Image 1 (cartoon, rainbow, N blue to C red):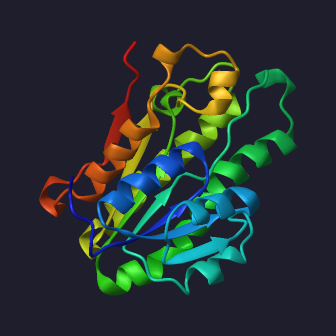
Image 2: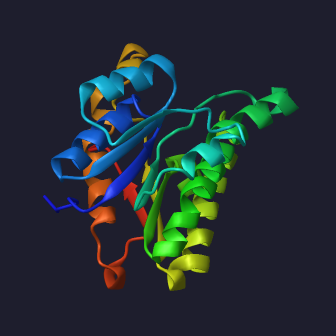
Length: 225
């Protein structure tokens, strides 16, 4: 396992299934974690393992940016987000705002929070979690989710191209299917069709430890089937 012993990494969505797997992977690699989440899920994540900072923040609120800027981190791993299905012709403006606030606005505020320090130290990494639908540019029955996750990918890749000359890099992780979580198991999804969150976590660790001259900007992770 690569060594991240000199790194402080902010992990959003703390307490979620994917974030929990990533936290374990990063802790095993020696990283110091700054956990960002909400309520009970965040409390459980903080109880599970040591963290340099624990921040209970609503990342869709602009005031979260000031709180984040008080913490200096070397990397941001943004797992906060949400999923919703629905018929495209029945979607409302509220549905649109909900998906973009949950997936894109939270990322925007997190980046605005961590970026000033990264630019000052001329080193940083931003990893955003997109979706298979966004990678394929098609998500039937989930058009708004797909659009918001496509925005996540476009934003992170644009940041990378704009800021790599100043030491800040970006990477997009695409789970090319549903993640193996208790909720998805309860929904009756086939085990073989689900992606192991530990595998996704190892992909995050891989991206974080790539040298500048061998950087990875996009990673697509598939289930076995």
